[in-house]
Length: 211
Image (cartoon, rainbow, N blue to C red):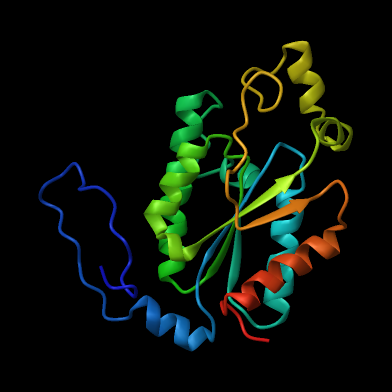
C-alpha cells in the first residue's frame, strides 16, 4: 500500500461498506506541516513516567510549531475506552482501539505520542503492524518497581497489594518489557528534561523533525 495512504485494518463486518479514496493524502499533510507523522509509543510500569514524558515531548514539539498530540492511558478511559476494564482481554481491546485512533492521527499528519502501560508485547506488536514499522517508535520507560511504587500518587500499588485492585500490572498482572525498543529511558536516573531531550534527539536523527 502506498505510504501516503491510511492503512486499512481487517475487513468490516458489514460487506456493504467500501473504503472511500482520499483526495488529500498523508504525504500532502506532512508536507504542509513540515515534518513526518510518527507514533511514539511510551510503555512501562505504572508510574514509570510515561505520561509526564509524552506530555513534555508534546509541549516541546508544539513550541517549535509541530503538530503533535498525546493519547494518554487514563484520559482515553474517560471516553473512548470507558467501557473497558483491566482484564487481559479488555487490555487488548484498549490497545487495539488506540492503534486504530493512532492510524487516523498519523494520516492527519500528526506526531502522535501514546502513553500506555501496554503490558503485553503481542498487543504492542499489533499496533506496530497496524501503523507500519516505519511509523512506530517504541520508547521503554524503564524504572524499578520499588521506585514506581514510591512515586505512585494515586495509591494504586498499595491498593493492588491489599487486593483492592485486581489485575494490576507489576503486582497481580505481568509486564512484558520490550525486547528491542527504539529508545530506553531509565526514568529513575534521568531527569524528565534529559529524557525529553533524548526523544527529540531521536526524532531529529530519524529526520522526523528538522533541526
